Length: 197
Image 1 (tube, rainbow, N blue to C red):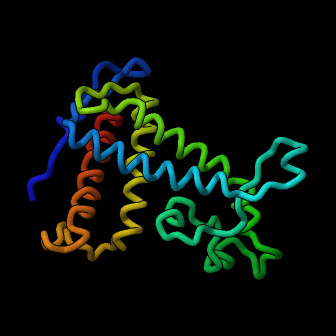
Image 2 (cartoon, rainbow, N blue to C red; image 1 turned 30 degrees about the horizontal axis):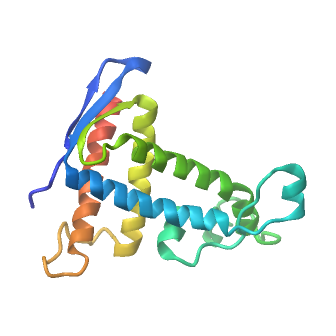
């Protein structure tokens, strides 16, 4: 399969002064803006629907949902902190109360904030209509976070497993989605290689 590429990520300079550049066409720009924007909407809706409590109002410490998201895509972005099969590994015979609920309530607001910051960085640096992208090392890290989050979302929607083929029949309803997933994976890998150089 021939993949569309942003014209390869390139590293310029070294250390903290390093920058990373690539060119994207109008279609790639629109695609990135659309899928990252959709992910932002999901995360923002989740954050805004969190219950409020009196302690949070008094202390200023936000709390989030205690229950996992019902939506599989959002559930992949905000997974449980603890799985019951880990009890033996951490030496717990029984965990009192809802460990996941407590951990989620405390940590989810900050996790959502970080994911949204990464997504907004990508949205703020990808040129409308295509063109050159120039990132600092910090922005490149945020791009990687945003791309990975979008890949996780798409992967959950598509049910990606080790057995998923590289491409689907062109008539398959998810063929284009899988193509985007593979393209994002490729972009992520290229940028990681440049960051590690």
